[in-house]
Length: 381
Image (cartoon, rainbow, N blue to C red; front, side, top):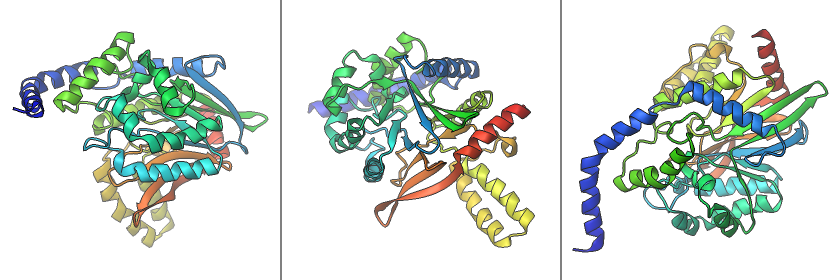
C-alpha cells in the first residue's frame, strides 16, 4: 500500500476517534474571549506601545496632513492548495500593494499573515515569493510594520524566526505585538491610533509562554492533521460578536484613542458593522422621506443579514473608537483594509470587477471628525 494511502487511512481513523474529544477540550479552554483578560491585555500592550523604546511594540508620530497609512490583516497565506484561503485574493492583494507603494504609503500588516496552523514555513516561503517581494518594497523604504497574530505565533515563538525573516525579506526585521501611531490634529488635540491583531484575551493563543508554544507546535499541527476546524472567532459569528464588543468596550473607555484590529475577519468602521450602518441610513432616509433610498437599503439588508446577523442594542450611540480591517481572504477575491490619507480614514475594498482588482471606498470620515467625536464622547461619559 502506498505511503500516502497509509497516512490517509491513519488520519481518517484518528479523526474519527479524536474529533469529538479534541473539539470538546478546545471549547472548554477557549470557547470565548474573556472580557477581563481582553481589557488587561490591551491595556498592558497599549502602555508598552506608548513607550518609544519597547522592543515588542512600535511607536510612530504623524501630523494629520502627512499621515499615509494602509492597514491590512488576515491574509492566511499558505501553500496554494485547497486549504489556502488567500490564493483567490492574491491578485487583489498584489495590485493593492503596488498601488500603495507607488503612492508612498506606510504599510501596517496586522497579523495572521501566514497560515502556520495549516502549512509549514517551508511551503509558505516556496509559494509566496511574489507576495513577499511586494512587501519587501515597503521594507526598502522603511515603511513597513509587521505584527503577529494567533495563526502566525511562529514569529513570536520560534528561535529561528529572525533567520527566516531575513531569508524572506533580505533584511533583518522585527515582528511586533502592537503599534501606536500618534497623530497631531491641532495644537490641543492628538489622536492615538492603536493597532494590534485582536486575539488578546483568547486563552488559547494569548496565554502564558507555554500555551503559546503549545498552540504553535502541538495544537495547530494537530488540528491540521486531523482536519478539525475549531479555530473560533474567524469562523463563529457568536465569537465575532463577543470579540468586537470587547474590543469596542476597551476603546470606548480610552481618551483620545482609536483601536484598529483584525482577527474576526469582520470589517468594522466607526464602531459599526456594515449592517448597523445600513439601519442608521434607513432611519435617516425615513426621516427625509426618501422612498428611493429606503427601497434600496431595504433590499440590501437581507443580504447583509445572511453575512452577519447581529445588531448591537446601542449602535445608535456608539463612540467612533473601534475599527476592524476585515481580512484579505474573502472567497470572492475581495480584500478589505483601513486606509488613512489626506486627512481621511477609510474602509476600503479591493474587489474583482470583470476579473480585475478595483479599489472601492466603502466608508470614509475626516480624521478631525473622528478625533473630535472621540473627545466629545469621552467628555459626555
